[in-house]
Length: 631
Image (cartoon, rainbow, N blue to C red; front, top):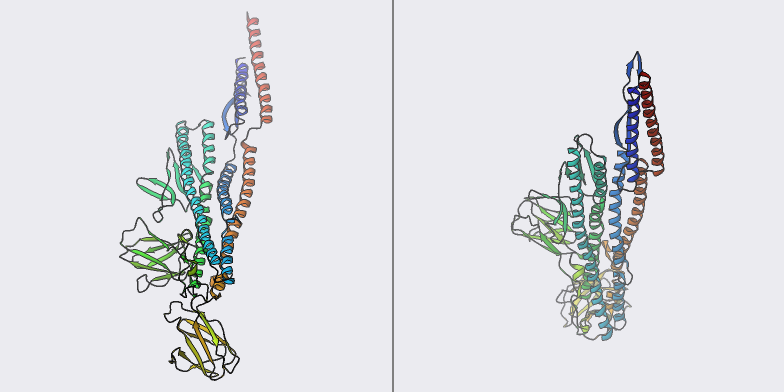
């Protein structure tokens, strides 16, 4: 009889425990990160009585967390990817608003500037028109500086957000390390809520940085970030922090600092909000800022080159129209040598929109693309007699370098912020062509001379009058205004240009013997508009990529590229959110609490509890009946 009551009591206790587990599930239905639990019941081994095996009831074998590790890992990965896309998209949209605003775009300012140059060409002696050109030049410089400042502000914001994200990561990893300690201390059966809390912290951590985990035999987990850098090992969490870039003091990098060292993770974190910010800075913001500087350099260099070929109202050759900031160069704080590097822009049209790292290996210098670490082909050794030359740059090293010394070369880093008009007097705008060519009235042929083209504005004899005298249809000689022969007989073929003293002129037609053509300076107040027209024509003239891309094209390409990046970022975020939503549903379908299902379970174990109670009651009643019979 006692066995009958004992069997009922085991069922009663098992049903009671099952009701407690089910009630706990219902109570935590809305608890973030809670994984529903399930009671495991097992039959108590039978005992043999009179050759018959009779069951002894039921026991609670354990309480199990209902989860799927594969689905949990997929949710964590989707969280990291969505965190990255969210941060990337947010920054891309803001950059697109800055550069894509038609009212504030570089393209608008360029059109206004070149339109003002065209207006000067239509009325080259108008002081009002010249003053307007100077105003538009100042406005163009302000626009470049304003956009560069906004991009710089965005870069500084990223640095600040990296610091905040590092603090968030440290809070989460410290919590995981503490839970590791408590789980290990609990032995082989840690409370399920501790494991739930740790898994929830891991999910939140994935929103900041891509993570992987490795479970340990003692119940703890080791957490890795990025490409395998340890963040948590057992009860210890490593601190994520930010530090200044040794090559660029105003930029922060992210890594792990401990025992006086710093492990740089900037290029190793690809997921989470931190990965998104780093990717945006590296792949979008830095190139956009460099390309903005490239446009500014192209405008400044092209206008200066053309302006130097013209003549102002005072009859003097034009100088630089814009002031262009020099390239930026900075030495690594870890350099041990005494070397310094000077950088000059040799060919502005060839300067690429990127930054470089110059490294010394102990015997030679090598130039690298800073973003990709790709080697940039270069010639020269870097000495004053043999400068290192690559992509329009000329680099000269002085002093003694030590192996491992590095320098950051930013050829376009200061250009956009520093582009300013160098001309302040409207009369100093070189709107006129400096030279004119004309055929003598007594010429026998109908041959004509084109407008002289300046090939070397620095030639000291550029403005000296010269006469071209043809001795035959295929030969000419150059003479000075004083009638002194400047050259001997020169062979000439139809279509050939005649070049001298930094100018070149084309003769159309076939000159006759004794035909003369003069090349002379126009002088002050000539009213000529040749150079102003050439300045206006720079807008659509090929300049970059071997003449295949104009200044306005590059400005439009910058806006178009950033717009395309923003569109792709928005599409990627939408796709990532769909994947995250599905991964969340997949996990919830396994681990989430379904109140209807729990209600059914509650009813089932309630009935089991009541039935077990009835068994005990019947057993007790039979036992009491037996006692009464014995009496």
